[in-house]
Every structure is written in C-alpha cells, then in structure tokens.
Amino acid sequence: MEQALQVIFSAAFIASVLRVSTPLILPALGGLISELGGVINIALEGIMLVAACTGVLVSVWTGSAWVGALAGLLLGTLVALALAFFHLNLKADLILAAIALNLLASGGTIFVVYLVTRDKSSTSRLVSGQMPFLSDFVPGLRELGDIGRILDQNVLTYAAFLLTAVVALFLYRTRTGIHLRAVGENPDAARSVGIDVRKMQYLALTLSGLLAALGGIYLSMGYVKFFARDMTGGRGFIALAAIYLGARKPFGVLIAALVFGAAEALAIQLGNLRVPTQLVQTIPYVATVVALVVYALAQRQRAIARQRQFLAKRTKASA
Image (tube, rainbow, N blue to C red; front, side):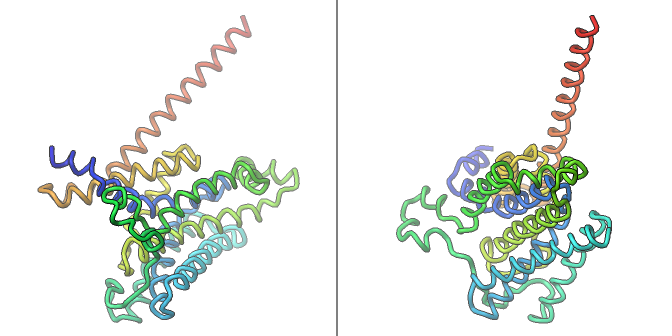
C-alpha cells in the first residue's frame, strides 16, 4: 500500500497521466462535437487506427514526421467523411455504418502493415518519425528535475489542452457552433429558421474525425514510434464514455478524460509492483464502468429532483 501511494504522488505518475490522457482527450473532444451535432461518431476507434497507421507509414516513406502526421489527419478525416456520406446521403444507420468502419479499419490497417513489413503485429522494424517534445524546443528542460519531467510532454499533449479551449470557444462563442448545437437539439426547428442541417452534421462529423485522427497520430508518433495491431485498445470507446461523464461540456470532457487517464496510468505503474497482471489490466475498464454508473445515478437523482420541483409548483399553483 505504501509503495502504491508513493507511485501515485510521484512526478513520474503525473507525467504519465498527462501522457496517457492525450489519446483520450482528443477523440473525446471530437466525439463531443458530433454528439452535440446530433450525429454521435461511434467510429472514433477506427479513425484513430487509420490515422495512426497512415502517419507511421508515410513518415517512413517521406522521412518527415510532420508530413506523416498531415497524411494521417487527412485519411482519418476522410473516414469520418465516408461515415457522413453513408449516413446523411445514403441513409445508412449511423451506428451500423460506424461499426462497419471500425471493423474495416482494424483489419485493413493490419493488411496494409503486412504488405509493407511482412509482419502482422507492428511496424517496429521500420524507422518511423516521432512528433517533437517540449524539450526539443526548450533546451535544459530535462535538467529541471521533477518539474522538467512533468513539463516535457509531446507537443500533441499541449495541443490537446489548447484544443479544449478552442472547442469551447467554437461551440459557445461562434455562430457556426451555435447553429451546430441547435441542429443537435432540434433539427426540424433549426431547419425552419434557415440552418442547413445536413451541412452542420457534415461539419460535426468532419471535425470529430479530425480530432480523433490527431489522437491516433499521437498514439503511434508521440506515445511510441511505431504502429501496432489494434493499438487503440478501446480508447475510442472510453472517449465516448468521457463525453457523457463530462456532462457534454468541453472542460467536463477534459476532466473525465484525465480521470480515465489516471486510471490507466495507475494500471501501468502498478504493473511494476507485485500486483497480479490480470487485475492491473482491468483497472481502466472498471473505472470506466464505475464512472458511468455514478453518472447515471446522478442523472437519475437530478431528474427526480426536477420532477418533484415541477409537482410542487403545480400543486402550489392549483391551491
């Protein structure tokens, strides 16, 4: 127990939380935009896989991590656009189309990796690019001890926190963001005042794909320097849980993603101690289930409280 507490209150643990939360924050923000637009993106997992694989392979081919990242962003966004086309133009069921894309991404990425490397597990044989860390721009940062260890994060980690504020400004301070939320609340009412519902939903899914792709790129070009089979490990679905745990608000989603990231970081750190591996591996998923149960109970209590207030006002008015 003492060892576990020492792990939790260490600088290494805080740095680990920031590191493992990044691929949750980015797709969760993307999922939030699509959720508020009324077209929840269940294909976050597949988009992350496609972007992660593309980024690594293109960076190997071009010798540039930035070009690889741009290629990953482009292809991941195209997957989201494909989902939008299937649902909005061809009238396919949104959930079924997203599941199909997830399955296609899972098998397709491994097929492409096998064609390139003759290895079905990963691209570890290739020398791929990696997105820079803060220490690459700030000399001497690593010499600052614990503070330096915490601050020396990948640039995409800082981008995740910055994008949280950007998404909040977009959704609540811009005309387009307000229109997007109006479409998600009531598409018929939005259409009646001249808002192009299909255009807003296309935008929601496109932005969702862009942010999810950025999360995938971080996994293969920030967290590590290779692509591995199904390396997302359910993060796209955990990101969806963070949307609702965060009360469908950008900063709430950020906090929820950090909570899930802390659970995953704890699992990683406990793996170094004498704790059964099977128990350690369940921690992130158990934390997700518990968080959703707590959220559901809280929502139920709020609904009951609102109903009681309504009945009290109605009784008072009739009296």
